[in-house]
Image (cartoon, rainbow, N blue to C red; front, side, top):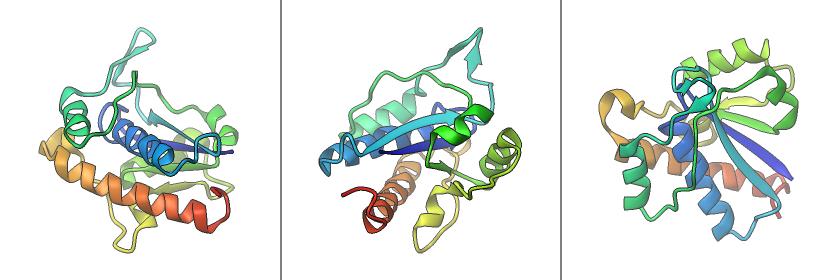
Length: 159
């Protein structure tokens, strides 16, 4: 079983979108039971009194517009104890990558990467919180998740 953690700043836009998009891809590829997807934040900004905020409404709307089922979700913060529990941590930008390294105290097994670095163009998923570009973020995340699925298949981890 491969366990994938998508990570962004607050876990209400990009990482939660990636979790939902990749779960739909896993289901469509009939790989349930072989790959699991989760998401978390490098910050605690969207968590109040131990309860995380739900997916940001425009992110939820973009997922629905694209036909991606939206499961119940509450923001959670990434913890140092998560490192041994997951096979891969995929973040949205360089700031998230620095945050993961800070939380984990490094990346001794090389499990932390930017999602779009799995694609030929590389780069970062623009933060729609600031741009309002939820469609653009969806496209980037979708490309990254498709590349991830191919990487897992090529590694023989998702057959």
